[in-house]
Amino acid sequence: MEIQPLKIGTKMAKVPVIQGGMGVGISLGNLAGAVAKEGGIGIISAAQPGFKEKDFEKNPLEANLRAVKSEYEKARKLAPDGIIGFNLMVAMEHYEEYVHAVVEAGADLIVSGAGLPTELPKYVGDSDILLAPIVSTAKSANVILKYWDKKYQRMPDLVVIEGPLAGGHLGFREEQLDEYEGQAIYDQEIQKIKEIIQNYSDKYEKKIPIAIGGGIHDSESAAHAFSLGADAIQVATRFVTTEECDADIRYKEAYLNAGKEDIVIVKSPVGMPGRAILNPFMKKVKEQGRIAPVHCYRCLKHCNPGTTPYCITQALINAAKGNVDDALLFCGAYAYRADHLETVKEVIDSLIPERV
Image (cartoon, helix red, strand yellow):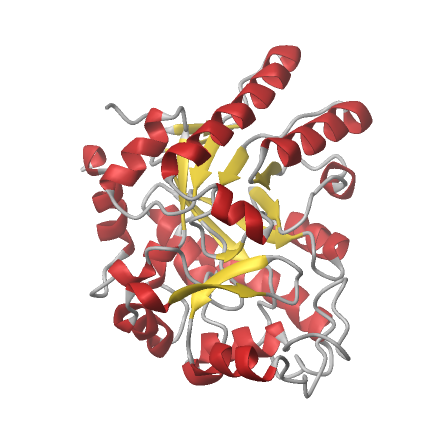
C-alpha cells in the first residue's frame, strides 16, 4: 500500500503520523518537536504543562499558560518547518483560556477530546489554526459536526477517530468497551463515523481527512487503519519508550517492565474510564476506594476534591517525575509489547516502513 502525505488545511505532513497528546508532562516540546522534525505531526499536551514551574501549586493556571508558550518554542526550535499542535481536554478548567494561549503561541493545530469540543470554533475566533476534534462513536461525531455546521458554518480540518484500545481517557462508557471487544466490531463503528464525515464533506465540498488511533503499535495495525480509509494514524504509546519522550526514564521503564496482565481499565476523576498500568497506587485506590487529595490544582471542571477518588494531577505529576509507585501510569492496550528504548525515527520507520 502506498502511503500518501497528509494534507490538512494549508499544511502538508510528509509522514501521516500524528503523535497523540499525553499529559501530564509526557508529550511536551521535546517529543512533539522530534516527531515534527521527522515529518509527522507533534502534539504537546496542555494538561498541566507547567507542573515544574516554581509557582505551579500557588498559580497553576499562570504557570501552565507560560509553559504552553515555552514548550511550543522548544518544539519549534527542533522543527522550524514542522507541524506542531496541542491536545486540549474539554474537561479541563479554563479550557477557553488554554485555547487562546495555544493560538497566541502560534501553534498549527488543536486536537481536542475528553468531552465534546462544541464551542472550539468560537474560542479560536478568526484565527487560521487547524481544528481536529477527537471522536470515538458515530453519535459523538454527529453531535460535533452537526453543531459546528449549524452554529459556525464550518467543519473540522481533521477528525481523529480514537478507538477502545487507546491509552489514557477513553471516549466510551465502560460497558461499551466490552461491546467493542474485537477489532472487527469497532471497524463497523469507524465506517459509520466515516459516513457522517462524508456527508458533511459533500455539503462543504471539501475533504475532511481522518486519522485513526487506538492500539496502533506496528506496521500491521497501521496498515489496517489505512485500509479502513484513514488518511493518517494517531499513535501515542509507542512514543513513550523513545529517547526523546519528555517523561522520566522510570516512567518509560514501567512500560518496558509491564506484562499483558498489568494493563487494566481504571476509573478516572474525569468521569471516563481510562487505561493504565496496574501499579501499587491503583491497587491502593481499588482497595481503599479513595485517596483524599492533599492539594487541589483546580484542573477539571467537574472534579469535587471532597469526593474524587484521587487527585489526577498529583498522580500524573508523580508519573512524569518517575515516582511510579504513587502514580497513575496511563498507557495503551499494547504497552506491554515495548521491550527496549527507541528513537522517534525508529518508531515511525517501524510503523510506516514504506517511507524508509
